[in-house]
Image 1 (cartoon, rainbow, N blue to C red):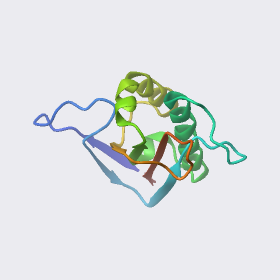
Image 2: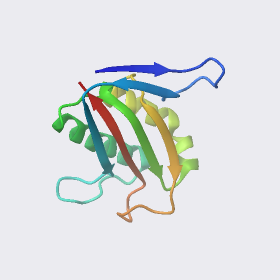
Image 3: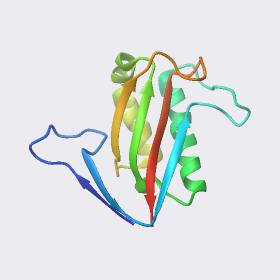
Image 4: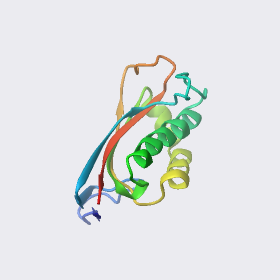
Length: 132
């Protein structure tokens, strides 16, 4: 699998994402939305960074179970119940991303939603990956 990150100089410099990812490979993995659920189905963490850490770890666990690595991620969408809070924690969330997933950023978007399936959830991540 190859993933070429494309960041045209005509666009604003990306921070924590890539403007486009050109991927080639043989297996497409769709990753369901992951919140901060533990193995018993309970939302863990009271803060956005705590929940983001668990949600990202859950997404990466599903990806690894499918045979992928964080570098295989082509697209991730972050659904947040409070984008202002997400922006306020952006530096910390970026550090969590780098610690768990590295610096091969997929194409990403952050979308504010009224609420998530689990009422205590503050953030949910979904995406897809392209595996060799």
